[in-house]
Image 1 (cartoon, helix red, strand yellow):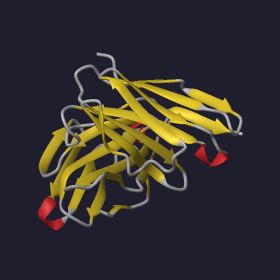
Image 2 (image 1 turned 120 degrees about the vertical axis):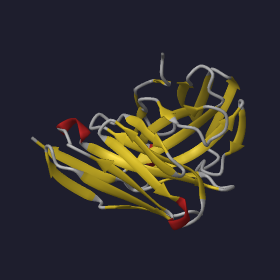
Image 3 (image 1 turned 90 degrees about the vertical axis):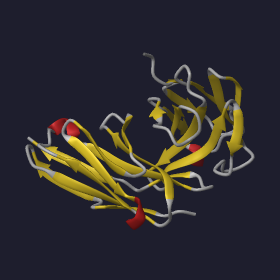
Image 4 (image 1 turned 30 degrees about the horizontal axis):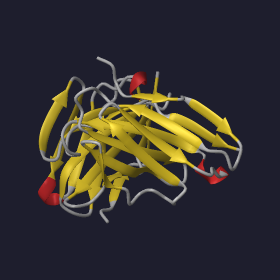
Length: 108
Length: 114
């Protein structure tokens, strides 16, 4: 099945800093989504982005499907951005697979 | 708008007992997913329904696990008999037609099997 890698596994930032999270996948995909799991365990959908670029406030994401990676950008980070960020992909005829996540800690 | 609703939020039971987890998807969504999250294995897709029909249950770990979706507004995940290794957080998610739409998750059920 399709393999998903995320980097870095852990990231510690000072409030106000910018960051880039990366997701690599091993096969062509028709579905890619980014999620944020907050410290209370809730999973929030950030982006549905199988290709191209999207922006939502301080967050933006870019997927380069031909090169099999996606990037999530967080600008002017806030303490409420802390949590785990997951990339999840679905290959053609394959199941939806979550990556291992990037754990982000934003310090005040 | 109401999001995905799961019940119970927490369940603690003894090994061997039957466990039933419940999910109400977002109204109008056609696809429903059950996931399990553990420290060791991360988030795993267990089963996926589209228009109330199970499409792929290859992630269901064993015959002790079963899932049903009798109508568009309700699904259950049942474990019988339960074992300590089933302890995990179980999430339900729903999306529009087919799986390649944004998925919206419930708050999860934290299951502990003693």
